[in-house]
Length: 446
Image (cartoon, rainbow, N blue to C red; front, side, top):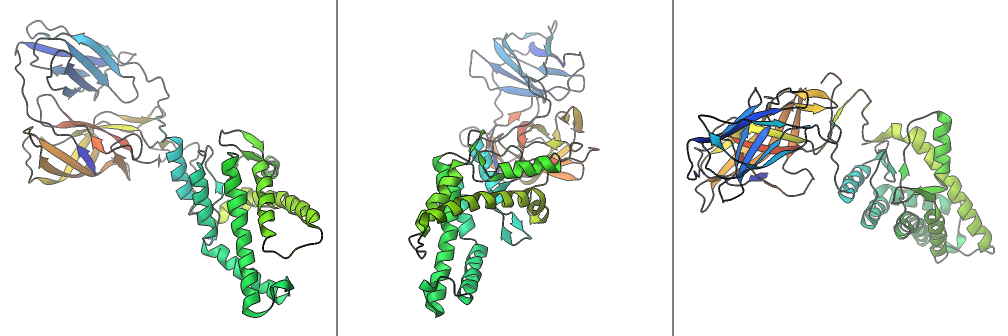
């Protein structure tokens, strides 16, 4: 639910003969319709006033009290335009304001990302759903080309999900049964007691491998325990990459480093296993074999990840082709309500409609024209001491072709829920800026 600030029908003492008006254009001289203009006094506590430019790119505030004002104009894809010390002029001989908006310094493709730890949290949740054939966990691989680094807590979370999963527990039981049938580790004995010891040792190996070899050491040395899927290039380059990543790891700083956390993790997990595994007359040789088998095992696993497992895993994120534009999460969307809200009371509730204030673009292409529809549900409550109403919005959706795109109140997910509405000049309609809630892959024709 998006909670809106109350707006009251307050009218300051105005001089009816004065106005602030003008036109908004882009650098080429083309008018910009749907730009949001706000006017606020710099000398008094007069309420902020808001309007939207018409089809001719013009805006007007009237009447306006004498004084100095700050005029701010915003439009999607353009840098914010601000003028300080704006003075209203007489209606009989008005002086128009010409606002030329510069293109935003960033690309016209709005690519807003979450803070790294929040982005990583979302990616970890997706990775925890990845399973080979829908059964076997495949959590320690990321298919994101620029995956965010994990915090120590997130590494432990990924490890915890792995060794409490039912499949590794089943592995341990099956392995214990095979070992008992082959009379491996006769020191453990026979029957239920022998099976239990073999099962416990197998499961402890799994926990040691994940906790020490994939979590603890990677947290201490700040390296990422996941395999970073390449997916592009020739077969040979991908195979060499998969093998090489058995010997190097990506640091939390984004740079590739020798995989000392894997090596030390293997040594540590081996050391712990000697506490419950039967002893050997040549522990040094066994440790050497453990290290070498660790490299071989990682290389083999990485090759399978690169060429096989992605094709048979469920919940693998879909990647967009170059011909498919993406409407990024966090893209701002300016909406205008279709209803006059000034007459609403606390008893009013139900659906509310909006229209898009200006064209929505991705990569220079218009994907939604000004006037496109959006809707949500609303509830009203009396705002104490203001004489106005508070509007609560729930689940606002923007119609985009055959897709309904959910919108949220802030540019950063979970960054707060309060939305400030602006009442349009001489109208009970409101202007509101919401943000696309998640990435939307668009059809090439959109």
